[in-house]
Length: 307
Image (cartoon, rainbow, N blue to C red; front, side):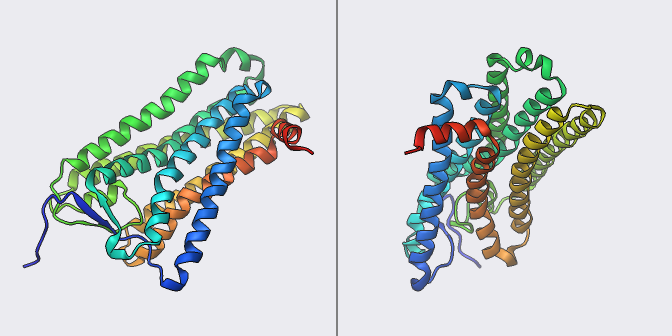
């Protein structure tokens, strides 16, 4: 009979498989990625808050995405960097630390969708109701949208983790480079039927709302552009919507790869790599894509950093 350790408060993180030769190159690559991600996201957030000309709904809402990326990467990468340098047998974490990391990990993944949804609403109002934009997108509305994006994510993830921590644990190995909900409930030998049902419902509702709002909004924007003879409106729509759509598709693709590979244990190492890339790639590209397309941000960066 297999021996089990019940409800152990010390867990072992499987982490990523690195050899002695690849240990330092992997560490250096992850470290540079983390530093780059933090510099661009913290930089753009500080720039938006200190420059009054950027105190516009579009940029204030975008700050939520940068905050989410900072939170997600800081929750995952520093711990991962330390684990890369440790022998596999010493990658230990307490159960409570793991629960906190799993909560923040899931919150990061969820807010990636909810924040992009409120950004979609902002783009819809700006293009389809330009004359009423300032009346609709007031500071109060920006606060409401921000609270909604984070509040909905917090409640959904809170229920998700609540269903997981109720389970008794009989295993001690997190088969993942960091703690997330799926890795936590896989520690249990009890029935996880309710967890799977809620997790599936959670994923379907989030993706349906996210993709549905995107499709409906862009359909409406396309119809407005097709019926409009204003070249400036069409140019503005193309510029702002294309960048938003690229950011969304990058996030969606990375997320789908993680979700799909989680269902195939034989591709465990690929799944680990995809999970790490989800914490790095969207967060690194989001700010660059928005910064490149925004003339206002380009001008301010040039103003502050030119010789």
